[in-house]
Amino acid sequence: MLNELYGCRKLCDPPTESVTCENGGYPHPLNCQKCVCPRGYSGVRCTERPDNGCGSTVTASPEWKTLTDSIGDKDSFSTRVDFSTCNYWIESPNGTEIEVEILKIYNQYDTDGCPYAGVEIKTNQNQQLTGYRFCSPFAKGITLRSYTNRVPIFTYNRAHLTTVTLRYRSVDPSKPRPTYQTVKPFPTTTVSTTPTTTTTTSAIMNFRKSGRRCVDQPKCPIYVMNGLCTRDYFPERFRMEVCPKACHYCE
Image 1 (cartoon, helix red, strand yellow):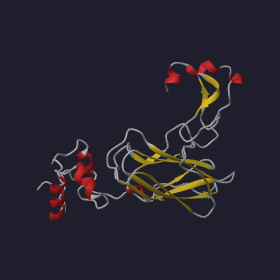
Image 2 (image 1 turned 135 degrees about the vertical axis):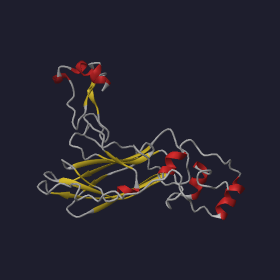
Image 3 (image 1 turned 120 degrees about the vertical axis):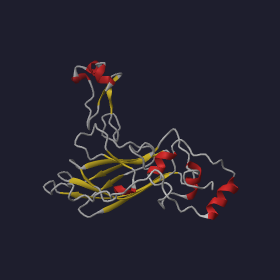
């Protein structure tokens, strides 16, 4: 956006003297012989999968296949500055498209915008745009469909552990695209900011023995609204660290 605002792309005119970029990339204003690539692409002309030592290229067929990725540290509950990332490409034969369905997401930080961890699936027609991001277990059943025979997917994490399980297959472009009728809806829930909890006496005793202060972290209200004190998939250790007072560990 800033390159557009300041007219930086004009530095690589005429186009005959610049590299030809693909997949939504454009010539780098400071070096017209290489490209600035959208997320999910790399290389001189944006034709390569980013390789940071994690991820792979997999091939889709008409039969469903499964992709599972785990990223992060299950023993760490504090947020990190830098993200860990894995980059995948799902490819299928020319003349086909790709369907991707979310089977499972395990993630302790399922907050709006997915700023801490999640999965991004780039089935967009315009690959310059950010893909569809998910970090909640309620995303199970969502199905996306590409417009080409390639789907970049990347997982990212800077807090605790994230595990994503997807399934994918190649489809004929004439097959009807997924709609709201073919995608499973999100469950309807009522959220309370003052939840009742099932904190046990033994859990309270464990908290007292730990020597922790009975002070909630600033981010606690967000997690309470997302069911931190009431949903089973949040580990007790995480509740004690983030929201000891709100989850009644100090009683």
